Length: 231
Length: 249
Image (cartoon, rainbow over all chains, first blue to last red):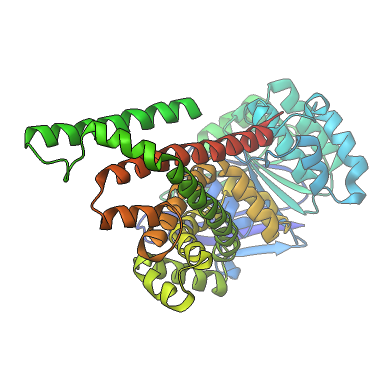
């Protein structure tokens, strides 16, 4: 399983500003990867291109053994006409019902299943949204700040659960949190401004929870230093 | 809610009467042009109850016309809100037709169908329907991206679900539009009766106009205001109860 983009050049229609200038990057295997970079460098745009939401010429993007790429972001909402429990259940395939109950429990959502989405805290909303995505058929899930507003210990637990229960899937986590990205992610793609050459560089993270194949162990400080330097 | 609406109406009605009387006495106009307060009172006594019957007759047609308009507007609006050639066709047609003053078509309907109940109903529906349709179509063609995204990327977004999401998310706007269109239904019915009918308060106003009897027109306006306020309040109460039920925990 591999998804890569090669020499991608892109600018939004009816604008002059070039967002990507010969950008090349790849997510070479299953695991928990990251897309990192300063605000405005085009992380969300790249995620939307990789997931097919923004169509670009086929030759720039290479999907190997990747059929379904889903993209989720932290401002998504669930319809409010019933409780989040029944909303999650209504979109979960029958085969995944057992997994659904385990995920709900692991993500600490059991007490809020009867509540409407609008009545949840921001962190609970993000957990509910992520849960329903994890219960879909996909090869790659791009999580655009999907764990924003989730407290740190729960965030670690959620990422650990994902890595443990979905080892054959590819996750791309977009976050501005350098510590989190360094600590949990296998392969970190740092996207930089369009004037920088190369526009994207790859760094290996600590991969603290250890999904296969294991990344070489480095000191966290060193990784953070590399990230800061690269971005 | 009803009390506030009634108080507002009474204040506006009273202000209108006072304005007319001040014009009458300032310009020394005869009772033939603007009736004296005593004459208005006597006219109210003479025709008040008959006019209540007439207004209720009009309200029944308006309510019926309003219900038909809502059903039609939602049916066509759902089709017009779709991203298909049929949707685009419906949308363009609706925008073009609503630009034409529908009331001008009323005489044609009376010539074709006569001056019975059906003509009043059709004109009421036509006047109420198009503004309602445009609002409904506007709401139903606007994606709620933050909700629809998930269903779209997972291929679970059916047209029924899309309509349900958009209606639910815009329930306040839609209930305001429906309340607003109730006035249009009332206007449409009165216009129809005024143009050519043999029943309803519009018909009574037309007769009063031929008699140049402003007192009768003022009494008719009073009852129209009272009944319209009651009708609008009723719809608002239904809208609020639906809204509360949908948003309840």
